[in-house]
Length: 163
Image (cartoon, rainbow, N blue to C red):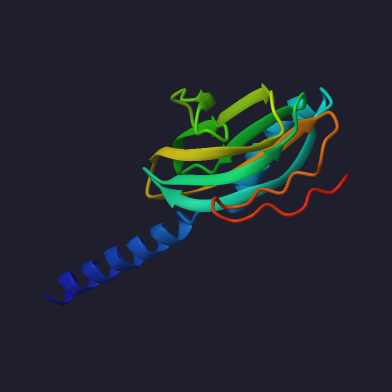
């Protein structure tokens, strides 16, 4: 009986240690997104601070980004080891799909030139994750235009300021 209790205690301790070792890593997801951004930085894009979070399979995170006509934009999504598949969708102000990245890969990224001045809604979909995983989206802009300050849908964007 004592041996059985000892084995149960050891297995419980191992489970606790394993779960502690499987903690999400937001720093890794941000580093991953910025490593993707190096390519675009070398092509004249200014990479802007990230939007980060921790979510599981099926989560959809949306945010609004002000855009200016004729300016190139890129949205890049990095992840930690627990995120298995990320997708990005970009919608215009009429809720029309501008572009998407639904490849079955752990990272996602889209690039487009805005045909109008206004806002786009960006949706990050955690298509597949192992439990909870950390994700990070960075935004790049090439060309002039106001500073980009992403906001949650339903919130009013801040007054645009020049960089």
